[in-house]
Length: 448
Image (cartoon, rainbow, N blue to C red; front, side, top):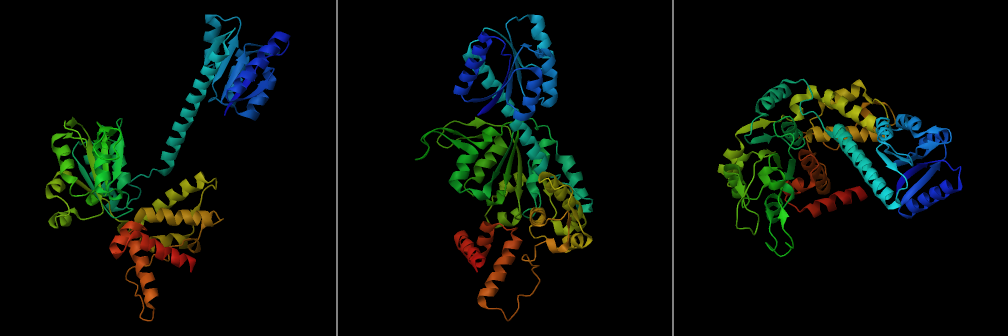
């Protein structure tokens, strides 16, 4: 329900009737109306109610709307203000707009017209709030892909800056959780296509048929459940960037269609007979060795050569241990601000522990470890005891000969999960069991 603030005098019986009629009408149509009868009362009420929109009579017992407008703008500049007057003029309207009014309306005014105006202003205000929230969320969650000072990350920055303005496909390689998707978005946002869409798709998350439909779209009736035509992500990304994460997991049957897009800039929706043209820059990412996959016929060699025109390799975190404190401080500052905790810092023993750990899950795991520590610790300084990553043991630690078969299985599954950065589906594939079976084992341990 939108909160509306109505400011007007109540000196005469006519005005009282108008006020009550306006309040009743707006309330009936979903507005929560608060009222004030003077400049002073309006200022106080504005602080208390924090409205979505305010309607102000020009003439008030202790002043005019022109005096009130700048005071309300000081309290909350985002609230749209509507001025009503029975004696409108162009000069007065211009002055009201200069003082911050969104709308200047003359009486008598149809209430239906006022409702439409208020609904539009409320919708615009909420859209601005949503966009501001999105920008804030992006600023909180987006990470500079080159945080750190290690030679490895500096070399990556130099290479990325050289290829950023190119239209050629880029293949980003690196382990799970190392920051490949962050680098892909950086390439888009700093390149010549930044004003166009950035569209990402995880190839490992979809079956062949779903991937085909998501990427290329389909026509009505193309298959049983295709009750309407659907635009594919290629069309959505036109003139922008298409990011295909885990492209090594793309079904072999879909790969020739992608190759045609890259070579001819044409494709067909499922069930269609005509080609559609599209202009996208492809950025692909994988944790697999695609050369090996091509030799084993799991990935088309012609597609590999086409997407690997430019290759950027994101180093694993264990190869840039000197960057761990820089990344940790960045994450802690972000988490502390987001939770109203202020600055959260690391004790020396915690920093040494972070640098000594192998980080099989890379940056994603580092962030998770720190987030868990911040949530569970009430202190503004994190010690080694607050860091809980002992379950992700280094692979070289012996399993032990005196363990039971069940204990051996438990330890082995923990290590595979660690190597896969906690990704259950990939861990299950490595273990040769179904995802549901792996979930059942994990839940069994938790119950025990």
